[in-house]
Image (cartoon, rainbow, N blue to C red; front, side):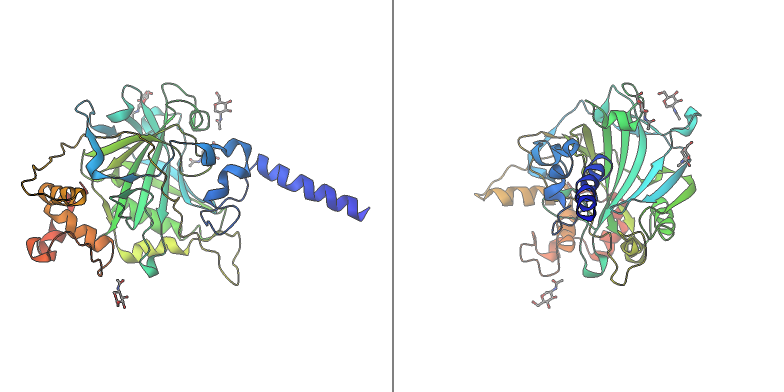
Length: 358
Ligand SMILES: *[C@@H]1O[C@H](CO)[C@@H](O)[C@H](O)[C@H]1NC(C)=O
Ligand SMILES: *[C@@H]1O[C@H](CO)[C@@H](O)[C@H](O)[C@H]1NC(C)=O
Ligand SMILES: *[C@@H]1O[C@H](CO)[C@@H](O)[C@H](O)[C@H]1NC(C)=O
Ligand SMILES: *[C@@H]1O[C@H](CO)[C@@H](O)[C@H](O)[C@H]1NC(C)=O
């Protein structure tokens, strides 16, 4: 009887796991890593087959200014939410409240004329101690310390997030880059503090008063494109909105997320959640639209294509190249401009709220 039981066991377990939740991971060295997501579950085939996947690199020289893009409006409501260690990500879930004023609606922006409602907030980060950056989207191939994503579903067309996730025009996601600063954004601080009670997989904690709006930078400028979820099943139902300013976190607070683990219990060799970002996907001709009036400088001297862009970045925003340097590393030999042409570090920090990527 033993061999038979063994065979049954061997066949049954992977099948049932595929039906529920296969143990996928962001670690590409493992079988459940991003390159394999599409093979783990038949409902996840878009992860492999999809041609409009996320995240992508935002190339500032390829932006298309669209005067029809209105500002995006996010309700400024305080809600109760649950923070969950899924083993892959810290996920904050906002219950659809029966009291409508307790929901967070999104209107305007590229989702217009549909209205959306925020359902989840997820955080992506790298290994802080090594200086690894963990944002999913990159700007001119610069990766940033972390990225917070506000994921909303279309309430005009669908009953709930689960239904909307797989359907046309189902989701809208706002990506906010998180950079290192002197003070941590208040709502990010709540997330880091709460993360200390969800170290292990499947642990959960409630946040009584969370203001999702507080995670947004003070800007109306964004870049938008049509893409996918950045975790299985990678459904191509997401209108992405990447805000053009970061919010800030201290290195110490950022490091708190690095304690999160993938296992349900304490292990002799801990399996940490970081880094938890999906590798970049190609645009395949998709349009990167923006409501930022990108100024192209007329070049007077002959120069190569990359110089055109760097020069433009400098014209539009003197601090940008400085940031690029900081974002890569101090040995970066491709630094755009000599430092003496840039604001001093002090001025740069003072002006952080108005810092733009583009
Ligand atoms: C959401 O609702 C369910 C069922 O009513 C409840 O068990 C859960 O605690 C709620 N979660 C949040 C985040 O309010
Ligand atoms: C959110 O939208 C619904 C309709 O979809 C509306 O009834 C509700 O009042 C809105 N909530 C807020 C806070 O405006
Ligand atoms: C979502 O809506 C669908 C369709 O109305 C329904 O069948 C399903 O049970 C709902 N799921 C949740 C989690 O509420
Ligand atoms: C810069 O280069 C030096 C020597 O090549 C190396 O020791 C140092 O770690 C580098 N710094 C960074 C930030 O990469």
